[in-house]
Length: 124
Image: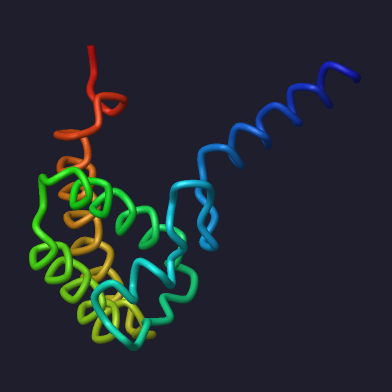
């Protein structure tokens, strides 16, 4: 029984370590701060906030390291905000599916940008 508790605690800790806080951390700006870089009015992403924050943060790292210009970073954020507003916040399942497909493409783009400048994300 003790092993089960230890394994559960380790799994929980691994999940916490791998998921950045929306309020930021040492060296990582908060979700609100990332949004304020490009827009005065932050978007409420609801249940998608954690995923959007992670995506914005990956793109932010690429921006800070010179892979992505600030204009491109802000355009990236704006496109996500616009698509979330029209599709992601909809109660229509088809619109929501379109948001998910769009967002997954944007997530892949952000990871690709970050991997180009962050050796910890490269395989090998």
